Amino acid sequence: MFSKTKETSGSPEAVTPTSTEPKRSPANSGVPSIISADLKITGNLRSDGDIQVDGFVEGDIDSATLTVGEGAQVKGHISCDAVRICGTIDGAVKAKSVVMAKSARVIGDIIHDSLAIEAGAFIEGNIKRLEGASRSSGGTSNVTPAPTASSGSGGSQTSKPLAS
Image (cartoon, rainbow, N blue to C red; front, side):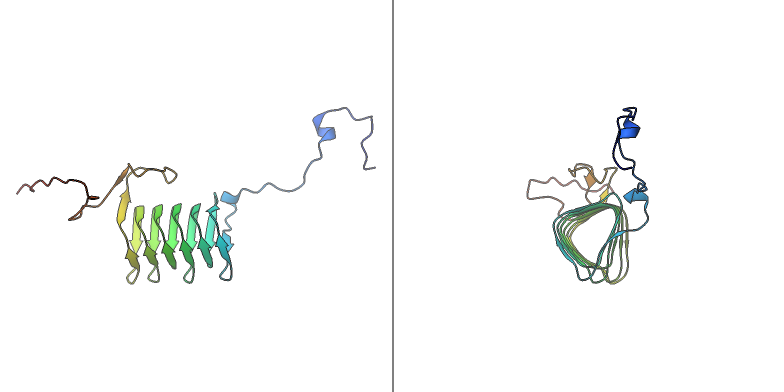
């Protein structure tokens, strides 16, 4: 009943067992991977889908969307298409869309296409606009920093007077 007999035709369908499990695509499942409040993760997270962090993550996170819950802490760099921050991040954030709730606390640079900040959110770092670079590119050559009084890194600077 369960054994293979010599009467099989030798075709791949007769030899290979078929699986009745449905194939799931993490990006289309609609359900995020959740790091609960009592969970601490040390290591990098990578997903093509959604991640929701309510606990503690020490490592870099790369996903399609990320939600950092109000009591959550992330120590590492974040690279996503969309990020909603309600908790604490200690590291750089690079995303097309960044939303910071009033309880958000970010210590690090934010590189974005779209940025929304609620009153009460805390940022310690630079905010830069993402100019046509994809989230997976490693360099920052496409990032144009916002004009500041001292926009240099210790090198020689030339200043031009503004036209009146």
